[in-house]
Length: 323
Ligand code: F6P
Image 1 (tube, rainbow, N blue to C red):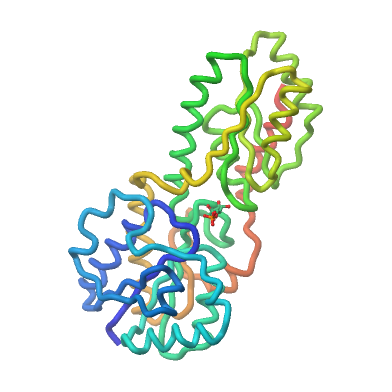
Image 2: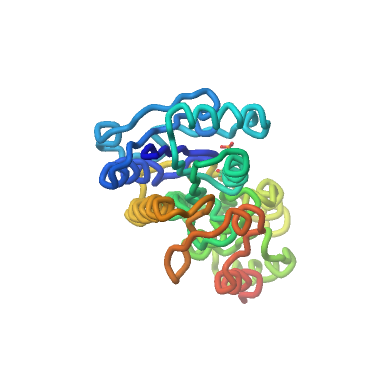
């Protein structure tokens, strides 16, 4: 079968459009007919599947979000809707499907693999949370980190003009990766994430000493997973005696002009996905580590808990220990 399709599922990320461009161009170069599935798994069920060509991807590389839209499909959890999705794939003679998304999306993909025959599936990790087991990088993370960097650098301007503590909440669902890397690279004084135990009394001693030595403001980055930004702001007011503000960065972290790194990674991920499926790989996810790209079984990726890089955790531990 020569028809190949792509869909985006779950939270969108910057870099998905670069992936769509590469998908269309590389599929055509390989003699495949590319199709877009609009609205994620919802579109597979509703048959919003259209043939794609060069004109559909012209100029989109600079845009965040995804040109073919995404969804978090509840219906897809039900077998009868997955059956409908498989019928639609068969109707369009689609033999290969690329899924951009997170582990929930890959679990859905695994079900499709089990319940269909003759269709090859390949997942590309795409989530700003960087919380997928087996891969060190997920598409969109670099852009999200740069958006956060810009926000914190801007907040620092106003924080340093007053005597205030800013509590900045970063996304990441259950994972503290975005918060930790952002705290380290923006020079924050405090970082609270679920992966590292913290001691507010130790922070208090340190901050009081720093205030005596002349420190006039604080930047704290906390992970949304802890759901305690307001409490931390109150702690700054009551325990440290400093006026505080909370800044929930929210969905702006998912948007923005994709960085060079994300555009390039989108190209690599899609190339690996298409090459792998053409070579006969079935139901895998492309994972990236310092050694390069590797196809892994879905079970190794979607059903294992993500572990944060040990070196990074070591750096993060220093937040609680500094003098
Ligand atoms: O998974 C990406 C993510 O942006 C998380 O960081 C966040 O917790 C969640 O999605 C927000 O989901 P929604 O866009 O459905 O509000």
